[in-house]
Structures are given as structure tokens and as C-alpha cells.
Length: 235
Image (tube, rainbow, N blue to C red):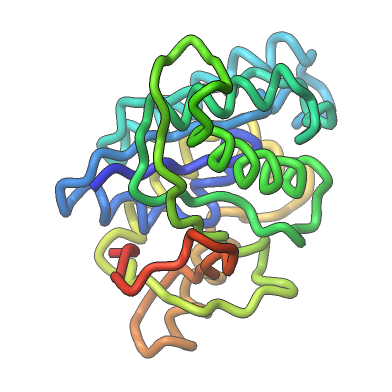
């Protein structure tokens, strides 16, 4: 199986679905990770260009924790993601054609942040457009319209999962991956008094309580034709 996970910022996938991605890897799937934005505005002190380089590096280190080597950034500045940007759409289409995913994971359309919502729409549109033969990108050929799963929102607010993945055996890998984002985790702990690693572990535990396991991650399937499947595609 080939899996494409697209988050907005470096660390979004770690928060919402890294336990699931770690399970995919363990089960032999080929996992590709993309973050659309570069995270350059995610700090109150570090200059955006320096932070951009730091966060791209942190994302690669985080992915390595779960055994993923295919990590891509579309390198859009924070708060500048626009699903209707023609050049950005073409980049997304090319990404999908290169990955040839059997399943895609991305943000919920109703997530709390504009950048996240734009990425959700971008992935939806791009994964459909990748099937259109005369829409040209550097990668030749087309990709099928893959089933699309929306991952949990931050703290699960406004999100009712339809499917759960048991990540009891991979939650420590999930937290270890998130911990690689020192520019975010350390800052929140030192300056805001927030232990974000514990925050995310608690949210994962809550989804586990809902589904009868120690730790879980929740997802919703896009209900649009022709993305629905009778198969269990999540691990």
C-alpha cells in the first residue's frame, strides 16, 4: 500500500496521525509525507527565514523516527496557503502523481486554522486533478482518485471520528517524532508553561478511551464520489 499524508505545517501530522503512519510503516506500506507550509512564522523570537530552515530539518528528523524517508515541503510561507493558487495546485497534483497513493490523509475541512482549511481543499482538489490526463505537470501520467481521510483537529474540538486506529504500540514513536520539533515544543514549555507532548498524549489517550484501547487516533472519510471504499484502508 502507498500512503500520502499531507499536513499544513511541520508538526501537524505528528500531532494528529503519526501513530497511524508508524503503523503503516510497520505493516510494510510506503509512506510519503508532505507539509505545504514551511512554518516560518511559528515563533515569537526566531527570524522567519532561520525558522524556516530549522522547521524543515525538524520535520525530517521527526519522520525518521517512524522510518519515513520521503519527506517533501511545498515551502509556502505561513498564512499564505491558498487552495486556489494555480501554481500551488500544480505542485500538489505533481506530488500526488509521484506518490501514486492508495490512500491520502490530510486536515479536516473545518479545522480551526485558515492554513489548515486551505490545505484540506488543496489536497481534495489536487488529488482529483491528478487524474486528468491533459492537466500537465513535470511528472507524466495520471493518478487514480484515492480515498481521502481527514485527521483529527487539535484537542479533538468539533471532530467526531468515524474510524479509529489503535496506536497503543506506536504512541511512543508518535511522541518521539513530535519531540523533534524543538523550536515549538521547547518554546511552549519555557515561555507558555505548556507541556505540549503531554497535551498530545492526553488527546491520543482520550480517543483510546472512546474506542476501547489504550491510545487511538480518529479519522473521518471524505464522503465524495468516487472516494468511498468497502475495504478497510486504515491500519
